[in-house]
Length: 344
Image (cartoon, rainbow, N blue to C red; front, side, top):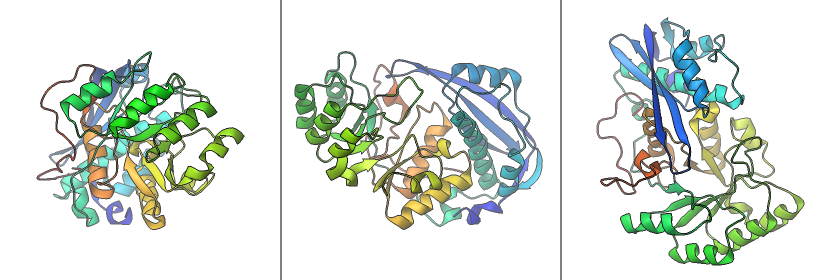
């Protein structure tokens, strides 16, 4: 697929950066930076979803030095290899991929607009309606209150939840009785981050048995947890460890599910290579969000529309991440772009 895009002509004359911030249901303030590339009378947009607010402040203060001139899309990506996108080293190396994706997705958007086409047309694919789930936390102590609030808003809503050791048998049974939980994110692969969660065999057994149809994402594998998951490998999925096709191939067993978060891959080429690999191997993909505040959310939704529209995509409209639920939010499935141009 990348070969169908690599030779797109791209003119980059200038760029601008715009910062965004918003409170989230996960109890932190999300910051991001939208990168706009300008050229030939068009503007391409991408979003840097690096998690540290300070990194965005430094970026917006120090600016970037990006390549300008006439390129192919692949030539621009190659030119970025010689650019350090961080004025100060980030706390986590994966943030380099996040920022690289912000620039590359803007370049892809711009190249497609300059060619007066869209990503679907360039790849010979259509944008289909996107099934989405809503990701939310259950509070401390955990209760079903937030889930019930959302189900009152839309009784057909589906969920991606993050189980914690505080989840009791009664809570699991209560949630399971609603039959709306589609993904359980165990956060076992986020080592060195605030959300990393130790392997808890009791929790794993409780949720695996309590939600027999749900996808189980990012378990931490130990002798005990592997024994619990041995009969459920067909619904184990991976997210945090996946930054390339090679990472998928290196998993402990060939997965049947994979969470695709484009920013983790850094480059358009790496992302499409991984998607193509999953399609060829029959691995079911679903889109993942990272609390994008602007065009990045549109991009993850567009990728879902093109490649895995029927999956339980964690790409709900951004309003579902706000602490206070507002009216007028669309229900699943999400309508595809009516007149796509550029990325979407």
